[in-house]
Amino acid sequence: MRRIVLSILVLIGSFHVFAQADSTKTDTTINVKRIAPKTALPRSNDHFLLQLGYTAWLGKTDAMKTKGFPRTFNAYFLFDFPFKTSPQWSVALGPGISTNNIYFDKTNIGIKDVSSTLAFTNVADSNHFKKYKLATAYLEAPLELRFTLNPADNNKSFKAALGLKVGTLLNAHTKGKTLQNSTGGTLNTYIEKENSKRFFNQNRFTATARIGLGHISAFADYSLTSLFKDAVAPSVKPLTIGITLSGL
Image (cartoon, rainbow, N blue to C red; front, side, top):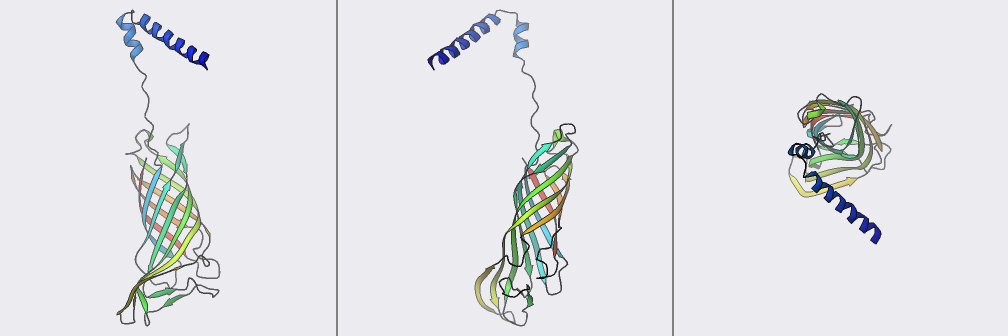
């Protein structure tokens, strides 16, 4: 160890001597040696994506009486890999979370029923919740093929992407708030939450598309698989449109 330290000190001393020797040269030589090569700053690759969207159920029946603003919130962290031969193109992939909240009007969803099918029951003429929703959460792995018109200035450039998301269901639950009677009178202000994934497909595949400028883009997601298992409920395929905020 002492020999290694001694060798390092000798090298440092040698560099110091050489540096002093160079200082005796002309100013032109010194100026040339002090010029540092220019380095390009790494481009922003949209690693972090936040999405807020409106979700519609394609294929829903009349019994599925949705209302309000059915919304989706997604958050992803993607690794971006530009093509060396064509830096305008890249592939991005990584993990993320997708949540969906669908609101219903005077409807009860038998998410914990022991029956073989999932029932959507109209409860307008009986006790019902003033606010009622079905919420799902997925762990997802998006894969995108990206195009950036000006990769040297990605923060202000036109960009577009097509891709596919593979997801697995983490949670499915209904949530009711403020119990009312058939005339709208309040009976109780409690919150009821029921959890069950039994009627839902555990995995889903979603086609994705984005187009925008700089950090903001519009996106669309279409589920290629049904939300519910075969034969337990109608084949419902969610379609989401919304806004993406990207950066880093």
